[in-house]
Amino acid sequence: MAILPIVTGVQDKILRTESKPVKNIDKKIKKLIKDMTDTVIDVDGLGIAAPQVGVNLRIYIARLNHGTRHEMWVPMINPEFLQLGGKREKNEEGCLSIPNKFGDVERRTEVLMRYQDEKGKTHVLQLDSLNARIMQHEMDHLNGTLIADHWKKEPRDG
Ligand code: CO
Image 1 (tube, rainbow, N blue to C red):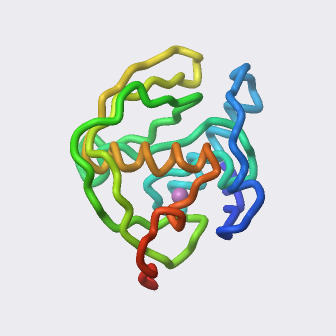
Image 2 (cartoon, helix red, strand yellow):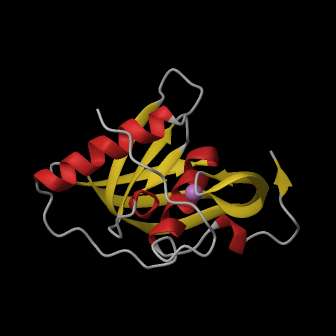
């Protein structure tokens, strides 16, 4: 088990870089996924994206169905939105890379995702509410966007 240091700071260069697609899901990628999962569990987060551990690759781990019996940690490689639908809904978000700040972010309530798992198998998955919000937050990380960019008001300290 390895807990990785989490990159923080709104101006951090790695966090602000667009991440590249994963071409080969090799041993190194599998180890990275394992370590990212250990790390996000350790800090009790809802998700973590590779740039947050200093790697500009299109990978994130999402905590789906949080607070239910069906909670699971799902690694997503090369995720894409096939659809962004539902309503626009504002809710408070925080980020492991911007510690102790919370502010409203408007997101869509339904998403249709396509992504690869660790075996390289492609999945299509429809998600809503908090699960959909996590997808949009983590996808932002892969594109160099942070929640601070969405904040229209000063965040609250938490
Ligand atoms: Co974040």
